[in-house]
Image 1 (tube, rainbow, N blue to C red):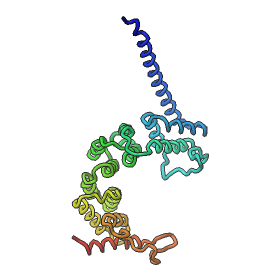
Image 2: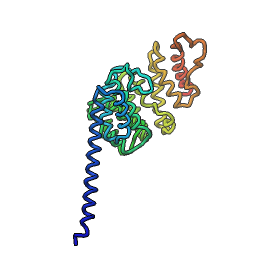
Image 3: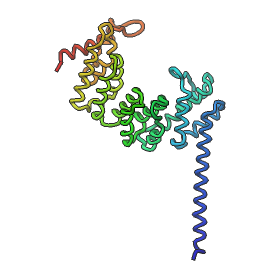
Image 4: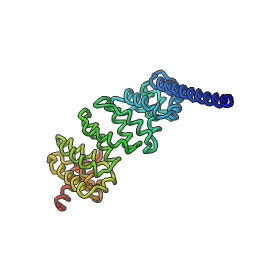
Amino acid sequence: MLVGKFPEIRFMRFLQITFMLMLLITAAAGAQITDRWLQTDLADAQRDTLIEESKIQNFKEVAPVLLKVLVEYRPLFGHYNYSGDKPWNDKRLEPKQRNFVAAEIVWSHHLRGTNDPAKARVLRTLIPPGNTNPHSRYLIVDALTHSQWTPELEPVLEAMLTDKSRTSDAKRHALDCLLHRCDINTYMPLAIQRIRSTKGLSQQLREYNYLTNHGNDLFTLSKANHRELTDLGFNLLQRLPHKQPGTGYFVALQLGFLLKIKDQFKPDQDAEKYQSPSGLKPGFFTDTVKNALAWHTANRR
């Protein structure tokens, strides 16, 4: 009875072996690519090939080594200066710097488009624990904020807000992602609370600028959230030192945006009194803040 089934069994066995070989070949290719990214003696043509192969590699396989290169080979300050059609082969760069530029190209390629749940889940697995590797965490959360996302990551980021092992910067970054990706009315009270509890006026101004930078989404705020946010902004401006009112310039601009004020409280920047050989005089920024405070006095609720 089994004689007639032997060909079918052999064929199924053939398919299984073929599939296993394909997995081994794929794994070997992934391992080879990983090794090459960490080499600093690549010729230009080898780096060209590495970029093209990495672009078509599964993101799950190539993401860890790209992240490693982006973190370990990054510039200590600022950015690398490069040019040309193939900037990753710019001879002015050191070998590690060329690998970094190449990794940036491939990382950006894989993160093109938005809201790919599979890629978002890969990014989730790469978030480092606690306070380890803050730059890696920054790159991942930034990618979740502006590129790949899945709603199942909301509780993961929410947990970061109360994780005592996380730094203040990490919590701010996670909160900003939640404001951008989820219901802004749910998380804006947490942002307002964070701004208020931050020590030092200069740091509060910084937090306000960062956590309210959400464009037209701000117009979906509830009346209560909108009022709390605007009242907080004007409170910060009122506490500015008399000798440095211009430090509240960006908060004034944000308030102007929130309130849909023409020019966001800015005076005429082409006016002669604001011109100098090096750009706008400090008076332009000071007058922007003064205009905001004058509006608040005239329209105080």
